[in-house]
Each structure stands twice: as structure tokens, then as C-alpha cells.
Length: 135
Image (cartoon, rainbow, N blue to C red; front, top):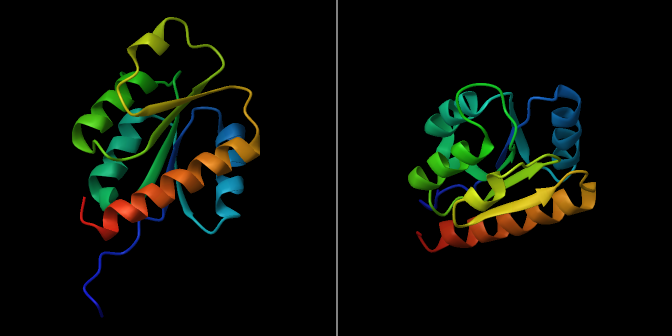
């Protein structure tokens, strides 16, 4: 054992549409990453509090059930984990896009599977580099 921290290999998907959430999970599992699916921001935050160091990236819809929408969720996550890659997606943003926290990527729906995979791979490489150098 080298004492090196394990590479973050979890993608948290937060989407209230079960079919879309399943599609995203299937895409990401093809590139050998673990996926944790959540229906709400509150559920995702609970997962993140338990497994934060293992998470490579968070993908979330803006429109979510519960007290927090995706923008509120991104803001809370960025306060706790400022370097964690966070991606928001939506087909109906309303006026929320101008409220995105710094460091949050936005991908409009409908997205293509290749877009999501490219974003996850980029985020994962950034996360691995950050873990390697202790940042």
C-alpha cells in the first residue's frame, strides 16, 4: 500500500426523470465509473457528505423536486467542495442560468451522450490530477 488516496471514481446523477437518470447512468457505467443515482438534491447531498472524496463529478438537472433546485444544490455543493466538478442541465432554465455559481458547467437539454461522456472524462481527469497533488 502506497498511502496514495484512491482516485475519485463516482459520478452522482441527480435527475427526477427516472428514464433519463437511467440513460445517463448506463452511459457512464460504460466507461467503468460507479454511478450513484439520486432523485433530489437533498438525497445527493446526503450521499456527498458520506462519500465526498470518492466523487469525481456531479451531474444534476436544474428542475428538481424538494426544497432545493439544481442551482441551489450547485451553490451548496460548491461551498462545501469548491473544486468538485459540477454540471447542470435543463431544457427549461427560466431565469436561473444567471444565478449559476462559479465553476458550474451548463449543458442544455437535449444533450448528446457523447457530450456527457466528454464532460465526465474531462472532470475525472481534473479530479485525478487534483487528488494526486493534494488539492
